[in-house]
Image 1 (cartoon, protein in one colour):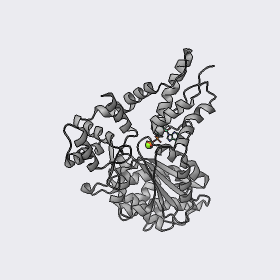
Image 2 (cartoon, protein in one colour):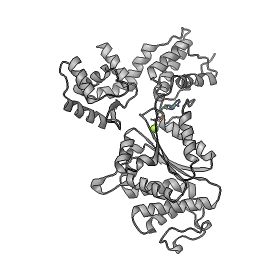
Image 3 (cartoon, protein in one colour):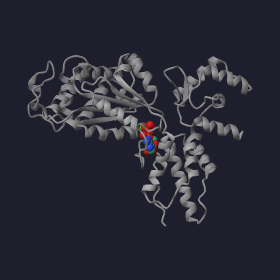
Image 4 (cartoon, protein in one colour):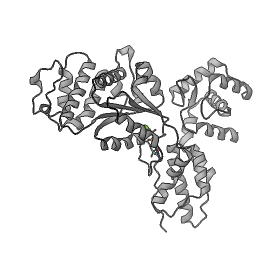
Length: 402
Ligand SMILES: Nc1ncnc2c1ncn2[C@@H]1O[C@H](COP(=O)(O)OP(=O)(O)O)[C@@H](O)[C@H]1O
Ligand SMILES: [Mg+2]
């Protein structure tokens, strides 16, 4: 039997062959869409590779089905550089949804706006949106609100659409720059809150790394009430099994994963979607290679582990200094290493297991540096965790090999 193309797709934002689980997240989103006045928006955070982007993609058809217009983009550093850049971002994202609509179909005009600047027949292209922005008197916030409100009034004049969803991925890149007196993140939050207060159905979704949560809280205290917060975790065991098995079943592939293989993949991946795709892709290739050679297709657990270590973890590891590596070893020895750990726990462990133990200020400093590099993150309760899924299992494998 010919082997069929490998169905697994490890890669940022690549749609998986089968999107496993995430039922409660989709339900929560459905509820947010059913609010009569938008009081809560969606905040979707989680480690890299946990499946935020593909979940966001899967929310889009749900919103469209229920009569919402979906606009959105990835936030990069440039769009968060200044308030004006943020405004450009919003107009750019709105334009595809509004460019076929004419201004004249709504009797609504932006406040303080000379009516001759928008003719009845003018369509709300990017150009028109930007001219509204430029000509609206007041601060950037006033201008931006005028743009979004005009867009909504043009949309609602058509009478069919329920509202507008603004979905922003990689939103951890949103930052206020106090030193430069530029507050694009606060601006975005203020604009949405203020427009929602008027009863206009616009819903904001922000997706990004866990650091986003504290960024929002620092920018605006009301942000905590403004968002329904979902911290995306790895898949449950049952969902992991589906993520592994459905893609091969549906393709009538000649390859079958044995129970043992599936268990090994679940364990090695810890349920993290990226790792599931990565490991399954490797296992699938290894299997088909072996079958082609007429060999038995065993689970190459150690082989896969080695490949995972070399391709996924080793790059990160090699960039660490010796002291940073020592810190990771101390963390990996903790009983709670896979979830959260504190400075005190690391200090205690390091005095037990390392020749040169750490003091608490040293640990705090090292953790701060590693947080900047994206290896560690600090949660809202002041505890730390690895920001790379299954990193501590990798460090433990190194410990065993020493
Ligand atoms: N629920 C899921 N079931 C199966 N595979 C998934 C699931 N969620 C994500 N993936 C896969 O995991 C990888 C990472 O997903 P992605 O959405 O890019 O993560 P993030 O945006 O959180 O970094 C992709 O290869 C994707 O296909
Ligand atoms: Mg992503």
